[in-house]
Image (cartoon, rainbow, N blue to C red; front, side, top):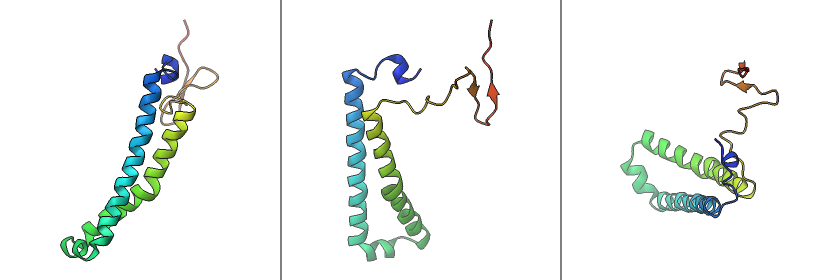
Length: 112
C-alpha cells in the first residue's frame, strides 16, 4: 500500500518526517564537504598512509557521493515534499488493470 493510498500524505507526522529527511540530506552534504576539506588539507598524509588503490577508491566514492548521489537524493526528497508521490509504487499498475513484472512481461489480473 502506497502513502497516498493510505491517506497519510496530509498528516503532520508525514510532513514532519519529510522535512527531517530533507534536513538530514543537507547534513549529509555538509559531512561530505567536510570530508573533502580534511582530505585536501591533509593531502600528503592521506597519500602517504593509504595505498594507491585505497586512495583511488575513497576519492572515487567521495566524488560520486558529493557530485552525483547527494544532489540527486536531495532533489528527489525535496520534490516528494512538495508533491507527495510514492515512487516505489507509482508504476506498478497500468491503465488496463494489468501489472508489469521486472522483465517486462505483462500479467493480467484474475477476474471472477
